[in-house]
Amino acid sequence: MAFWSTFFLVWGPGRRGVMRNLKVVKPGSFAVTNLFRCYRVFWNYAWTIADNVRFKELRTIPDWEFIGWEHFQEMQSREGAILLTAHMGSYDLGAHLFSETSTRRIVMVRAPEADPKTREFEEHHGAGGLRVEFNVRATELALDLLENVRNGDIVAIQGDRVTGSISSLPATLFGKPTTVPAGPFALALAARVPIYPVFVMRLGRRRYRLMTSRPIEITRSRNRDEDFARAVEQWTAELERVVSECWFQWFTFEPYWPEPAT
Amino acid sequence: MTMNVVIDRPEARWLPSRHRFALARLIAYIRLRFDRPSAAQPEHLILPIDRDQTAAEMNCVAVWVLATTTCYVAASLPFRLPLSLVLAIPLAAIVIHLPVVTIGPLVRLVMGDGNNIGILSVITMGLLLIASSYAVTTTSWARFAAWLFFGVLAVNCAAAVILWLLRGAVRAGEEQCVR
Image 1 (cartoon, rainbow over the protein chains, first blue to last red):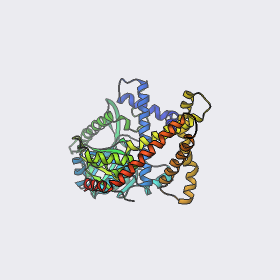
Image 2 (image 1 turned 90 degrees about the vertical axis):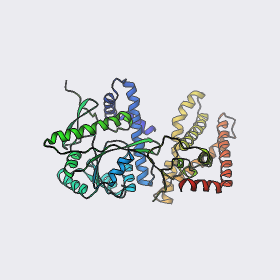
Image 3 (image 1 turned 180 degrees about the vertical axis):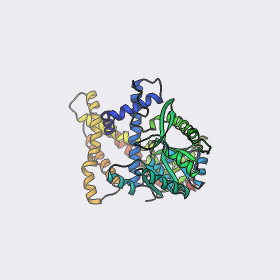
Image 4 (image 1 turned 60 degrees about the vertical axis):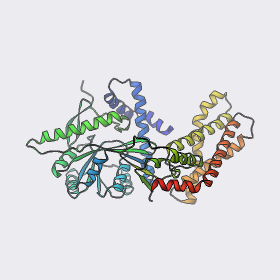
């Protein structure tokens, strides 16, 4: 706790990033209130890391509660699907849960890992039935993922944040313009599979909730941009609802919305 | 390593097997036996059977150990009581972790890599027992914390005896729950 509190005080950019995001998520809130909220975000993040390490080293798993169980089951019974999630809770624990409860293979797409040792650790300490794909070769990866979905796998992608030079789609979150990754939507359109918004949330010590929402179906029309816009709107509405309720679980340490030019 | 889990049985939260200390296991057994499940339950539930799973028990023990250690550290500081207590809280947190970082490497040398949490917990509790045995012989106010420590230990021992006497009923209750 002391270590993490020190980390909270020392890591100014992360703290300021969360504070700025909270200002948008909780409009009209006082800065001092958001400072305490920011600490809660850091606190939850610390526990999530601890739970991850406990799982990887000791295989300790938490209690799991499910919301939207019918959608979760529907996703598992389909021949291929896309699982769209956000930077919340613990994806390692979530992936382990999937590998234990699902007959389908999970392919998890992650941002490139710069440190080769960390990458090796991630690859060897994950859950069984799970394959991690680092997003380093965009074109090749897209083709691989398309094949995975067509083979009946579930492809898990984080859809709340655009990092690096990956292609994006315009969106509106909390009434402010932003962008979301285009990949999951393009993949869903190409593979003709639905997107299932899934969120992993930490409720307390060794207690997690997995929430699956109504699937997002991308229907093909003559106007592809409109097809994407409808799907993105549905996704951001879901993301906004979940982040509003569980802002303390949204681990976005950089400013999410760019500062308006003065 | 595999772990047993109970699926869609909310009452399994009170399985004695999901608790570490005898007193907590006894309370869990009583709740398992007499509690009625509440109407608001999640659509699907997975509960692992792990002795360290229950937050309330673990948090209570953590607070109890920290409070007892704080008393001992505060009593040994040469300042007035309020200042000593304020200083003792962070110092106690450091003192509690000292056995982990000093004895931990030795345990690792002897036992090798792996889950040595059990051994380190026994060593930490053993050191607290030694400290309490010393504090109880002194004339300082910390002796009351030491008496409380031994009181809790005595209650836990009594709970262990009751659980041993009820072992058949406890096993039957658990089997009924997980069936």
